[in-house]
Length: 193
Image 1: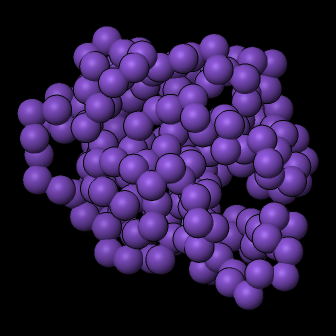
Image 2 (image 1 turned 60 degrees about the vertical axis):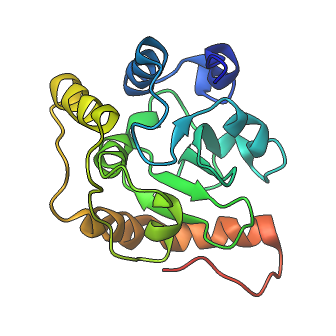
């Protein structure tokens, strides 16, 4: 797998500065060359390109993708631009490449890291659909990642991951639906509440 282009990833963040937690995750992915540490999620500068065609794209900062090409991003919570001061409190959204399962999935990046520890494939789709989320069996890479996250962030595998998603949706999903309608126009599908 090619190396992560951190400079391209920085392009979507306010002032070109990655948040500390994203920097640490970039270092992990590059230092250990682990690409199957969190299911199908991977830090990927391609997330930045996906955002280029979105309305109010400055309200987003893309940082990762999954196997379908869908994007995980910080979102300002409205059509307003992200700021360096607000990024740590921003919800995380999943922008489905087919626009079908786009949704708010975590209240902030700490909650998102908890979800990553599940190491489940289709994290974005499962969270968007409010499906059951559970930790997958641990491989050597997953075990290594879980220990690294515990040591680095003090975060462990969540016992009630669905509650993380539900909490985020209860606060942010209605505003996300408003933004989504700007993106998709009169598309009959609406993100799940």
